[in-house]
Image (tube, rainbow, N blue to C red; front, side, top):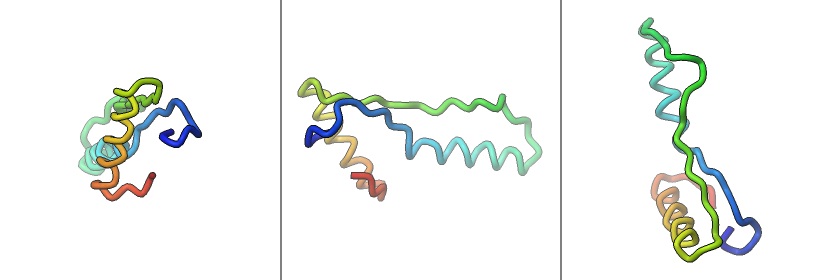
Length: 71
């Protein structure tokens, strides 16, 4: 995005992990499982404005600190 190859992106990882593990742990413990559809927070990114471009840069740094080799 920052080099002009894309203008818009939707990000969900690494947010899938924690909710998926919780559902699995609840299942193993024979606890009630919520409906099959699980809500996972999403964040959208655009680079049309300086604010959005800075958010993309900040998110890349956050992911690098988490060890996600995305960028």
